[in-house]
Image (cartoon, rainbow, N blue to C red; front, side, top):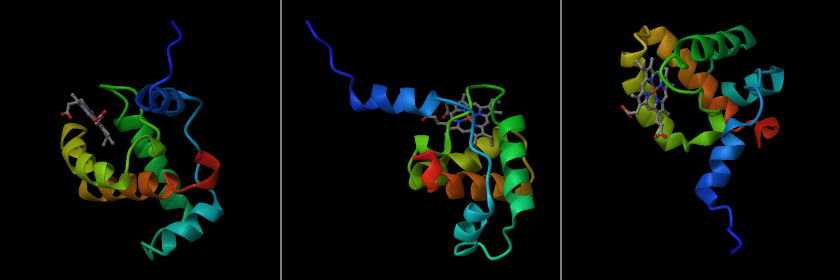
Length: 106
Ligand code: HEC
């Protein structure tokens, strides 16, 4: 019997592939349409906080692994688990929501 990849399994495989994308100037421009004070340094800091503080208990989910709604629900909850400051939480939110829209992560 031939087994088909279910969409959920496919998402899982895609979600695990390769290292996390680093933000670039193009991502900054897209981010600034939502958050005016974002710059390359703050997006890169969000990437650092995410990779250093969010991967201790489970694998690092790729930004594209979840919908914006799901991230907005998980980030505050997980920031408590990871003991992030409000600023760190905001950096992670900006990083994840910006990069989930990145053409290079699709
Ligand atoms: C202290 C351990 C711990 C840390 C640190 C942690 N998580 Fe989690 N995370 C969990 C556990 C346990 C679950 C599953 C149960 C739940 O949702 O509470 C989870 C679930 C998730 C989910 C949902 C996954 C799914 O398939 O539904 C996301 C997204 C997530 N974490 C993101 C993050 C982010 C972002 C950070 C950093 C801010 C983070 N986690 C830090 C323990 C942790």
